[in-house]
Length: 295
Ligand code: AMP
Image (cartoon, rainbow, N blue to C red):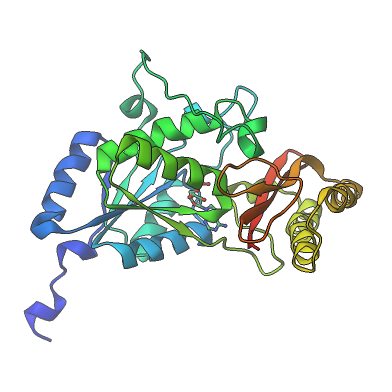
């Protein structure tokens, strides 16, 4: 074997950056010759869903950056910021195996100073779905993604359809703030029984894990009924809510929303795209899921 075949090129190595200045200089080195960069923002505890985003990022750009940051500003006071699963070393290994170029994992203090003079307010797109039940959640996401976009300056950013409201809000943010970042949406990765993969699934007890795919089944049932002609889904949804409650779910929301406005719709029209979406608790675990449907 000649020397050239065993030499490792810069893109075969993974660099872990903790500070913004390190990240900037590392990216300066990697991004010579107009190389493009794709960012995959995550909160870590990486699973196959995250890895599918990384695969898409690799198709989209020359360099892939994965950020791992459990963002405190998107958690409410009674939510799971402290207990959110953290497994940094495992995550780095997964990123290495997946061919990621840079992992950016800043401390809280690196991202947020003590003083806070600015806030971004979202109008209307966060009124319903997760925004309706988690006040401040999307403001926190917009704040951190805005910062990440300025830190990384990616050409592309990949987000999962699992958090469809997040995708729609960030698309709007990019338009209104002229970020010049292409937003790519990745399909939802599921376990064999249909449960959408999530870092929070580790909270589920064995019994809850068996029940958990029920949420997706209800969404699928609603989808089938809509496809077979039910265009005023209110009663259908009520029925599925009762079914889920009988299985032990505590419903946060279950409804059909317009993709464009993220508002609930009473009556569906041909030519429009809708989101059949639900969020529900099983014990202390909050599950979310959705199906996109174009009529
Ligand atoms: P998180 O670490 O939960 O903040 O998620 C980071 C990114 O991974 C977000 O864009 C999510 O939408 C995406 N994601 C989470 N779960 C899945 C999944 N099951 N399939 C595809 N993408 C996912």
